Image 1 (cartoon, rainbow, N blue to C red):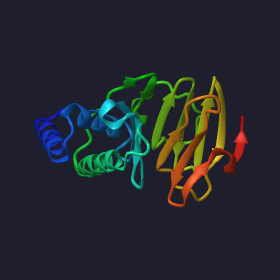
Image 2: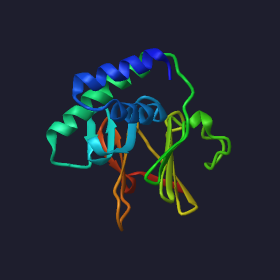
Image 3: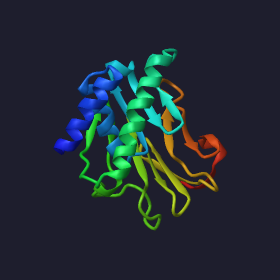
Length: 187
């Protein structure tokens, strides 16, 4: 991490009344999410939390102040990442959640010919890759891959519910998109 990044993290932490470690966690998750989305776990944000422009979720779901703080922190960091030269991302693991920069994937688990994913992510035995150029989404659940047509949706965020139903939804310019709303192309 550059000295400029470290200085920015300190300032954001002070301005928002959170620890530098909390801001660093959001920063690393945003970097892994190509500066557009973050999924991470940190106690200052109630445990598991997610952010993308227009969507903020914290572990303490009724804590509006915590949501506003995360939104302020993540928005400023996302702006910084959009304007800063891209630095190499590193794999990260937090509470069984792993993130990988699409450019780091040494062995693609998705079908060939889709192009480069704009974002990828995984939790437990479910993972996804979003391909905006080919308008495709690939979901791998317990080793079984399924390709979906995203149509006119420009996917910008992902939410995955924990527990028995393992619901996964996506955010687009039109709002929340459920997997069941997308046309399945192949198994």
